[in-house]
Length: 257
Length: 295
Image 1 (cartoon, rainbow over the protein chains, first blue to last red):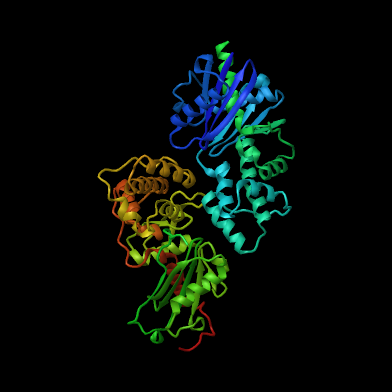
Image 2 (tube, chains in turn purple, cyan):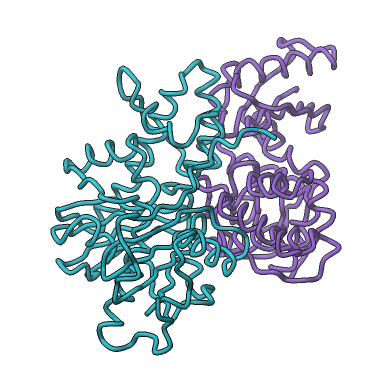
């Protein structure tokens, strides 16, 4: 049985194709403003690459903020369901899933068998999302990858007063003017976002083991700050940004069975 | 260098008909905000000079620059003052001030002077915060609420939008009123997300005016909820930089069903003006400098 999970996020659309529990392929692309067009093109190109047609597919499940734009999906699930389902598949022992994407942060408490017991979401404010680090990287004239890397060279703890990404940008510029080293500013940025993510996670309970998924899990600086804040090491899958798409494909297979 | 659409006019002003050397009490107010700084000079309770400029990365320097600019070519120096009060976010960093007073108190006092004793509600829309202040007929604060955590509803948020749309910050208000009908407000609260939303609207073919209308009405609604929580009583007035944005002001007026009083002076100087007035009151209580230079 071949099933597909499509996760249309605020920044990227991801597709993952599953055949009898094995991942055949996964891909992503900027979701842009024409989410329906982007996901259709992504589906057709990915199928062509595998020499498959839409007739070979048993079920397609969509998730993510733009999940309703996927008109060809026959199943729809929330990001919370998809993310917790995939995390259970990869790490059945995990009790808390932290999912930080481009514009949203989520904390999910999982029970036995990956059942969602509680969750918290920040979708109103960029301060607890990838958009925050993007804005800060721009202010420092670095790529997000560079921002993450140089942060590891710092052991300073420079406090950031601003919570708002817009105000933090001005604060970063003031820190630069005050000759604060870029790596120390980078660490301050990651410490700030980690502290916000941890306080959101505390609302559902910081039960260990903890997994970190979503695109922000690629940011080594953030991961380091998060680990320091929770005094533990989060589990991170190989393709953390594909977690929700993977979960959607798994759910599609279960529902079709 | 790319045009900086957010950049608003920095300037100084002096009353050429007022001979400060004849004055008895000279007081100063310096408001070092997170985005802008103002210095005000009052002679016997009359506004004599002021400056309005962007805050630099160094608060003490910004305070001094603002004061020096207000005093430019007047012959007055820091030594001629009876009292100087610092206010605003950087108020403790005004090295030449005799006292620091919170900007809430100063905005109420300055608003009372600027709009008259009938004003009971002052909405201060600053660069990085927004305050709804209730005051009595003497300009004394009776209650207030503020948002200083989030750029939505602040001048900084408006600057971000001016830059995104490539519209000079001073034209945003007028342009936002140039629409046939009011579009639905931008739905994102966060300025970062509102920016993406606006970029999407522009791609859908919305005009600059329509996007600005949607943003100004979102901002107006946001501050309206702050005002509602504190409880508005007339007369109502707006201070701070956004008070110059007719697009936001007219939409707040519509939501409140109240007309804001028209300002006599630049709305950005309200805090510094209040500070200078506090200085005058302190001098009258005998707290003025004893070593003032003779003019």
